[in-house]
Amino acid sequence: DTEVTQTPKHLVMGMTNKKSLKCEQHMGHRAMYWYKQKAKKPPELMFVYSYEKLSINESVPSRFSPECPNSSLLNLHLHALQPEDSALYLCASSQGSYGTMMHEQFFGPGTRLTVL
Amino acid sequence: KNQVEQSPQSLIILEGKNCTLQCNYTVSPFSNLRWYKQDTGRGPVSLTIMTFSENTKSNGRYTATLDADTKQSSLHITASQLSDSASYICVVTAGYGNKLVFGAGTILRVKS
Image (tube, rainbow over all chains, first blue to last red):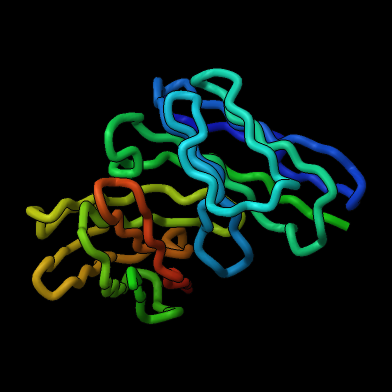
């Protein structure tokens, strides 16, 4: 299985809602990532988990809260988002080892988030 | 400052024609360089990944080149197909694999 899956595909939420994005991989990868991508822009790294521990937080606002329950799952909890947070949220995974981001990253299809 | 610049910003070609996309980088220390293809609204898919010692790598109709001396890479697409219409993103890994630097991408449109 060389696939990264993400649910839901689309999400519309109000600014007072709490929602979660989910990501799953079964490739035995020990590094997982969250990216945010605005239209016609490259992905921007948000968080990196390596061996289920948060290793990189790119100064992301606290209204985004990542969680890695086990080596196959990665969640992104959303609370009190702003309309400007509307974007495509991508999950990726790669081999977890020294120099985590040295290795090829496999991306999921993304969740299209709209904040009203 | 670590930067990756891609050109052209966008490109339109006829089906069956070849094209070449460019990537210039000022990333140090360099670990590897990747090309991704991203369809609209989908996640990026890896095409090639090259380390310092590799100067050419092919994946079907896609051929990437790397000149580590001039810090330039290119992605050549042969006999383009309508399905090649996508954004092509150049990504350079910096340091000891602890930083990725993304280019802005080239939007390719192949028309019949």
